[in-house]
Image (cartoon, rainbow, N blue to C red):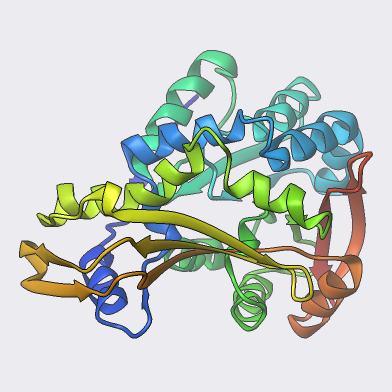
Length: 323
């Protein structure tokens, strides 16, 4: 049975675009890549052979679904499965189907910034798992923490798949994890994916494919500003550029202005000037090893209780609890 969708109003798009494009250096948040078009492009990215993250995590969950489900259930009679950034739910459906088949007593609360993604996921679940109890919630991670905090009587299992935590630099990640920790009780579980350090070329190829799919995804934020804020960005005037620092494990995406150009955004009453080869930073994709993950957990008041890896050790999922 599907329950009524609750909606959180997102009103920060204008504010954050204005702040980013008037900063020095300029930046835009990758969370705004996602609209109807952006959702479709990201599905194409996940299907790319170069984008190993999805396949690795899919295999981890498929091969370990019984153990993961048992870990989630523990000694509880029932629990809420809360997923941050649910997307199309491709990987999560493996667990959902197994747990429903195993007659576990749980409710699924998918959270995503994209209402389009939630609508598509809800329709798919109605068809594929009609008996699943679902309560979708639109919003950013921080906006929905209040909702997570309000769930006190029922055990919580919080999913954060896809190495989305990698969009945060370490100080931001610690703050985010601390907020998650504050929303958890002793028996709650935070199940999170961390992309591992590996051959730098493998990482670069995942974010800069020859077919240009990731380029289109990066530039989609400009098209969204054009459509929603009446901007006049020209996508072809920008170069998609990816860099990776194997020392820090930080991959960064940029839009680089190919020439001097002026861009007007009417709804922001803003005109910006870009010099030749000036950058707009759009995304961070942090990579990790066990030492870094253990440090992040400890700094956040959490501890690793279990971990799962693919055969190549490209990717890991960690289960965390409060210390």
